[in-house]
Length: 201
Image (cartoon, rainbow, N blue to C red):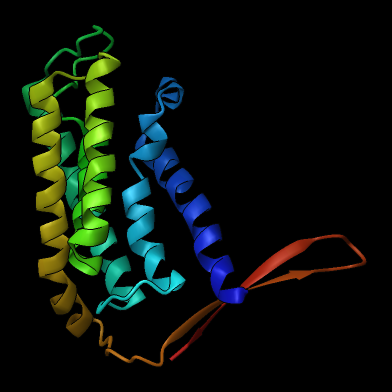
């Protein structure tokens, strides 16, 4: 039961947290792809907790996601500032490349790396759907979406390339017995609800 709770909580909170950080304009919440862009990334982080076989540890996945997101943001926002292309709906001058598509393909390629093409194909299908919806909703041109997919895949590779060097830099050793648990608690007097995160290593 405890094991099943972790991916549910992380899977619900993580995408919303990233969305709040990466999208300043509230109008983006109206489009379904604004939610679905984070599904592959959340899947990469949580599938291992649900018993899906993987050779990577949860902290490996967390490092790759962190580095991948940072890389994707830097590349995407630099290109948006340099190219300065007007969106199809005329709402802004930051159409190239598609950040939503980059985020979706970043997560999809991480799923492929960590769980193989069986799960990766599904993640790539979701990412492709995000790209199609960006064009359908007139937020991007088709070449913005293709460039976004490339940026996302490149960012996932940067996360993979830097994972082991970062682990060595911070002295993180691989240990199969490492466990992560989330323990909810409630105070009966005040009615406050809290949670404790426990890491055994």
